Length: 109
Image (cartoon, rainbow, N blue to C red; front, side, top):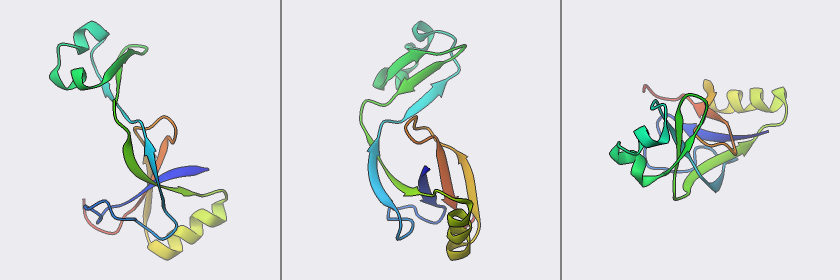
């Protein structure tokens, strides 16, 4: 399974670990507005492509974002990643193509 991978201490966009590969993905942000018409009144929404969802509006980026990805196919591979890098956090992403992020938690947020 493919994950986006980040490192808490990495503020410059460098490769978070040697296994990471760079990809370009289309991201999104969710807006709590109920309709696209309401959302278009918000300045930042105008910079994306709004789509009506069930009870909210999802705004897709117009440009791709550079992200680092990693393939983890077994629990053993996930444990090896943990053993090499320490604590990890798994959370949702803002990219439909790769819905989960592994964060190497090596610094305070």
